[in-house]
Image (cartoon, rainbow, N blue to C red; front, side):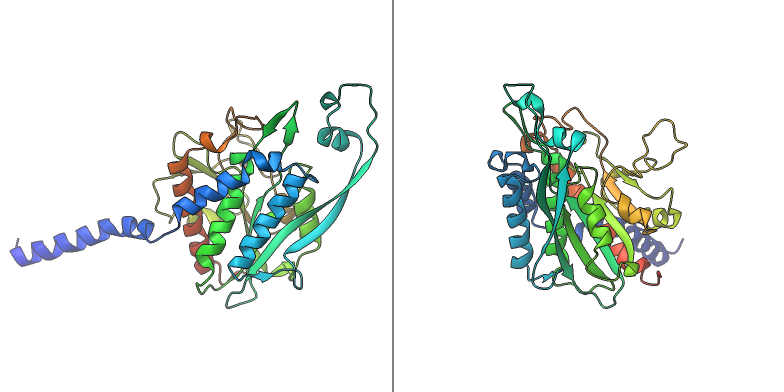
Length: 326
């Protein structure tokens, strides 16, 4: 073979082989700040971010202040807050105020109305078509004197949401980004149902919901993307992503007896009910799920950083590939 031709072919093959790594390296985020967000949101001082508590309200303030620091547009006139009320009765009331927390187990807790809030910001795109990015910030609070900090569930998703907001703040996108920190996910998805029925823009313009709920705890570098069973064209886009993460599928097929169906498992559900396609990024349940051991020290930091970079890469690809949707 001609030496010059061989050299040319070698150069072409070498260049192609380097493309995936270059694409992956192009996602540059402040990794320390990402982890710091998780550490703050899962700190003991927030006492588990239980709906209606002081720690819960501190969390709202932290998210809204960060959105404001990025210069993002408030979704509701001049406010990032979308307040709503829940009247807790029966099982919902007993879940929020467990009788076991009281010395007198015969105490009767009255029906209680509590106000929560979704915290929502907008990053304007070139069109009115929108990508909705969601992560819930509430958790379980305290039980029997122990704090359920919820680092993976779901400080990890909220920290990713804040990092995505910062990453795309100054970038030009085809789609408008609706960045929503959702309340009351742990109370039968009350916050996301409220948002879906009281959306800040025409909800028919939303072409995709990307939901993040538990994305930081896995020992095998495995992250699941649910939703592609219902919307197969999204899997073709996700398969383009280049990452050390092993992106897996299957938690959305009701006929799959080996994996649980996550179609109705988190805040993407109300939007899916309205016909909005979704991708739900999550890890499988682990021993720390809904336990006091779900702490910042017990998440997988390296895995989590790569998971967030993969999700950012997914947002970029969806912004390009879905620009003709609806």
